Structure formats: structure tokens, C-alpha cells
Image 1 (cartoon, one colour):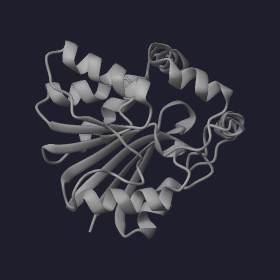
Image 2 (cartoon, helix red, strand yellow; image 1 turned 60 degrees about the vertical axis):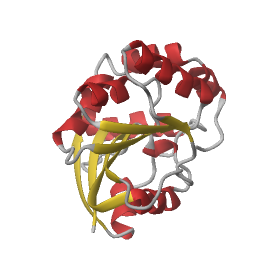
Image 3 (cartoon, helix red, strand yellow; image 1 turned 180 degrees about the vertical axis):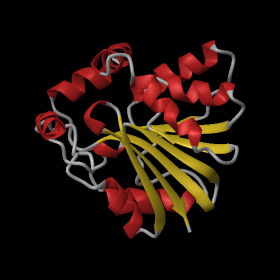
Length: 205
């Protein structure tokens, strides 16, 4: 699913507890608040979360009564998420899977959720076509990501140019354009510091 990871990525993603802490710290404890923006747009009960990470959002979705399936490409992260879910009294449905080959039938989900995953996907068009396959008609992809804002403010550009030098991320893409090219109706909202956090809602037609 992702590009070849640099040293930073190998360290962070191999240690789920450190990843959990570092994302909170680097976002000044806004990470979960940003993730929670997905709840504003969910429509339907059957959800696929791609890239569950340590499972915080997955657990919140379960607690709100959604039927949630998850995928994760990193075994350590998947195991950590499963443990979190089981400790909370739920039975996780988390698969080790690439976004390019989702192990689900066509038209299976009402919503697909990705939070802070799009910037890691190397072949985004290919991934979107696979998401479209498993999404029901009028279903939604809801994605929270970090990317260059539409207002192109200078401070945001400096911050994201620095992040983009890492081997772990590819933020030069206009993510919304990729969904539009695959036939989705897309709306985008920028928020967060310097508008570097984006929410996309892409509806399958």
C-alpha cells in the first residue's frame, strides 16, 4: 500500500505505542479530534476502515454501533489494534491487506474511512478504483489527510515541503482530483493549523 519507508517510518510504524504517542504529540493532541470529523458525514452502518493503525478510531466506530471491518498492512499495528478491540469487549474484524487488493466482494460497504493514509499510497488511482469496487452505489469514501491547502499559504507550504522530503509521504497529489477522475462526486474542506488538514467526502455514482 505504501511507498518504501524511510528510517523514520520504520521506527514509528514498528512501534505501535510510540506511533500512538507521537501522532498525539506532533498534532498537539488534536489527532483524535481531527479523526472524529469523519462522524459528521457517515451515512449507513457498514464501514470499512483502511489503515486502522492502533485502532482508536475503529473502537469508537464500534462503540457507536457501526458494523466495522478494518484493514492494515503492518502486522504489528494490526495486532495492537486487535488487542485494543478485544480488551474493550468487542471482536475485531481486521485483515492484513493491501489497499490495492481488498479481500471483500463488490458493493460491500456503505462507507470507506481513511484517516492520515492517503499520503502514504503510492498508486492512488489504482487504490481508488479498488475502493470503488467494494463500495455500494451512493456510498462514500471519507478521508482525513494532511496535504497542501487550497489557499496555498506560505507557512503551510514551508511545513509541508519539509514533510514531503521524507521517503514516507507523498503530499504533492491533489487528492480530490484523483477521486474526481474515477467518477466520484467530491467535496473538500481544509481545516487545522494553516489549513493543512483536509477532509474529503467522495460519493460513488
